[in-house]
Image 1: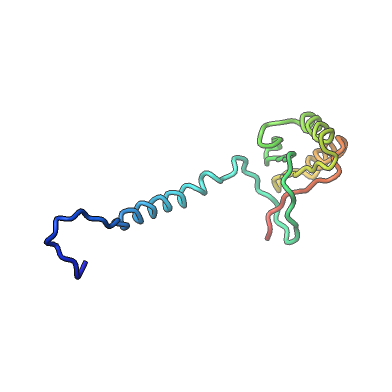
Image 2: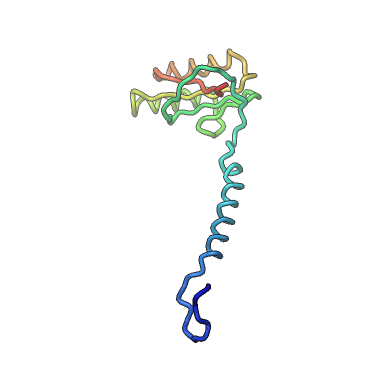
Length: 134
């Protein structure tokens, strides 16, 4: 602080911003480290890869088939019958409901087709199959 006289007993009226910046940087680093842990999906599905694909709109009917064949409806354990019933309920509320199906790449084709059949027989006309882009 060149040019200032230190002879006066005046109160320091300047804000020292260095400690504030240090604290903000530490908080930023904490968020950067913890965000991937928080955002990690709770259901691990190894999706098939494809070069072509489009973004789909968010849906209230998200079906996941794990590599062990376990069915999940919106993140909760389910069955084909529950998926069918939930699909019917969604169609009764909105005729343009959409289903998003995420299946592990080792799941049999027959399992995916049976889920598609359960959803379409409930009245859902649009569905999307989730992939990982190459």
